[in-house]
Image (cartoon, rainbow, N blue to C red; front, side, top):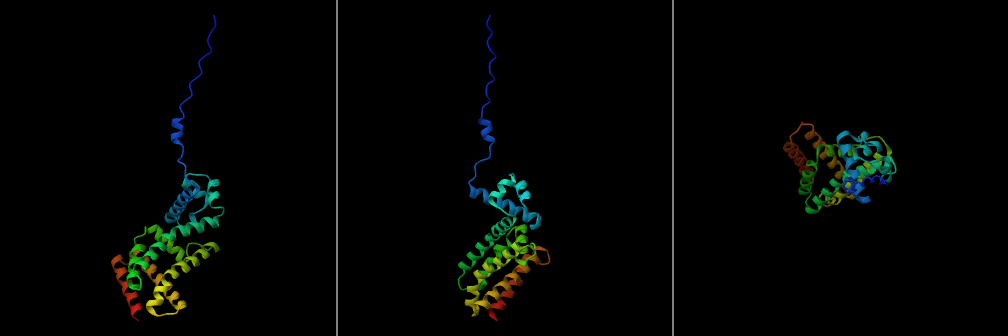
Amino acid sequence: MVTKPPARPRKRSTAKTAETKRPYLSRDLRRQTLLEVAAGIVETQGWAALNMSALAERGGTSRQLIYQHFPSMEKLLADTAWHIFMEVAKGTTDSVAANPGNLTEAIKSAEAFSLDLPTGRGDALWQLIAGTAGSTPELEEIRQGIRKLISGIWTPVVRKELGMNEADARAYAWMSILAFWGMRQLVRDGELSRARGVKLFNGFMERVVKS
């Protein structure tokens, strides 16, 4: 009597395996996703908490993949800083463009956008602007780059409305930006209500414009 060989176990369907695989992300989309994760770390834990290991863990990926997008800690810090800042830069540019020749209205539009930022993102930006994010040369370079960019947005309208030379208009623009962020901190810390802070700051700027 010939016995039949035991039947081979059926292969399990690969459909379920395929369903559990991570969706493919293009390199650019993956990088943007990682930058959002990095921004989230900074906004909840501060700049000192951001490193390759923290990003890999929070992003659910490997350090090797992180290094493919950010080959050094300096690159990760710089790209995260600009990723956080560019939202404000765009909002500011749009505010100035929507109110050509009217510095007061442009300021009101820009301040509304900035005050509506999530608290963590606003704090991260303030730390960059004020130079308290860290003492590394990379963050110092980023701080100066942010100052140059945001001052450059406001300088033409300040120069036109106040009749200043470019150097003075740039200085006025930056001092006004710091005054706004000072007001934002008072509101954030509960020392002023938002309405009171906006009223005081707008009154301050109206005096500057009319002087």
